[in-house]
Amino acid sequence: MLNALFIQNLAVVEKAFIEFERGLNVFTGETGAGKSIITGALGAILGNRVNRDIVRSGANKTVISAIFIALSDEVLSKAESFGVEIPDGELIVQREIFPDGRSAARICGFPVTAAILKEIGALMINVHGQHDTQVLLSPDRHLDILDTYGGLLSLREEYAAAYNGYKKAAADLEAINKEQENKAERMDMLLFQINEIENSHLSEGEDEELETEAHAIRNAARITENLEEANFLLSGDDDFDGAVDKVNSASLAITRALEYYSELGDLSEKLEGLSYELAEIAGQASSFADSLDFNQEHINAIEERLDVIFKLKRKYGGTIPKILEFEEKARAELQKIEMYDVRLNELITMQKKNELKMQKLASRLTEERKAAGERFARSVCDELEFLDMPNVRLEGKISSCELYAKGAERFEFFISANVGENLRPLSKIASGGELARIMLAIKNTMADKDEIPTLIFDEIDSGVSGQAAQKIGMKLKQAAQNRQIICVTHLAQVAAQADCHLLIKKNINLDRTYTSVEKLDFNGRKYEIARIMSAGEITELMLENAHQILLNAN
Image (cartoon, rainbow, N blue to C red):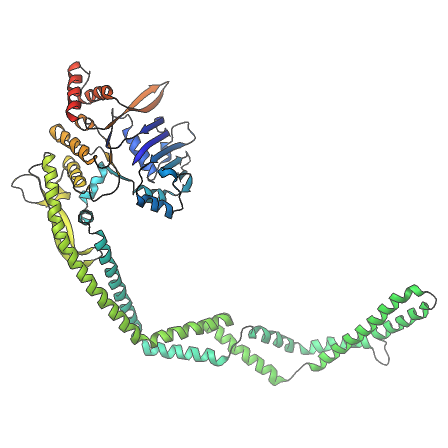
């Protein structure tokens, strides 16, 4: 449950620390005092989107923190799945909002996203505001209410799995049948492509080697001319001393000088070694020039091979690896087509299996829903009778339809608000006050189905007064016996039922508005209830009346 809420620099709230209790916690206050700010703060803690305009003027950020205790195993497990550690069984959520629109969230000090806050928060708090009655105005949501009440969500999930399996098998069958319309033509094409690539005996890097060789052959004359020139300059001839001869002559000169100067030994050896290396280079250049093949047939063969590779690249990919990859994919597709009969039988079997399971589960869902719908309608009508709507008839109508993700039927609430009137869709005739009480009746009916420990009602008593308001207060009190309820109200009859009464006050000091939250004692509650009931000055008679209301509520 929610143990405490800390708010700093949120709109008109400079700083507030609110402690909650088990049972029914009620917020009251004058119009414009900031009751909606409290529900907005709780919304931020639950991961809802926040507007940067909520940051108090002049503040560098808004800080909202909440402490939750008595955590369920589901909450602990969910937090653990996100890597959040919860020490001592206290879950602390903090949200910071900055004037530039940025926000940051933490759970027990661990940074988390707003999406994670939503997932964990949804297991701890259920917020019902005036706008949440839209659920009742949307027939598509009525079936969810019924299935939750009837404990049918797990059965519906099992059905949905069979339904999705059936739809997937049907889609796969349609796709494979379309593929088979041009099966023979496609197989011929794949076989031709595979054979063409396979018979080319491609090897990676082959094209680069051939291009290098072709380039060399195309320039063979120039290469030979330069190699022969290099050999001549190194080796010389009968009329010309080449570099080798000149280095030998230099080496002999150094050797003669060595007789007179011994330190020239290293230089002599270097020249002698250089002479050998130059002679070897000259020989290699000569040999390479002699080895060059100028055979025209060889040149033609290289050009033809490169032409084959070029055509394959143009058809199947810009490189040899891509061509080989294309071949591999073509083989896989061919194998898939050849396995058509096997795959077809598998899909037909799978579809029939899922269809039988789906129909069986759909029939079971239908029967369970009919029984649950009758029990649900009776229970809600009993609740509404207590809430001063004794003549209201609420029924859930099930209408058959084609199988879809939720089953074989649609479900919608119908209502007759007065004796003698025909049942009509709830979404078309219920007033705001009626919707509020119907929603409360539904919440009470489903109380033992909903394991969320804290419920928040934002002015659920809107549009009602008198005895109906008193009974709403009693129902909230009854519902709060097994869980924590936080309620924003403007009715004395509801506020009187509170286990914890919190007053939201607005003050103006030095041209700034400040909102504070105060927990009221019995005497404070008496004055606040008298204020709610009064139209002006609070008299002794009003105080005595408020005193009696509190005693009666207790």
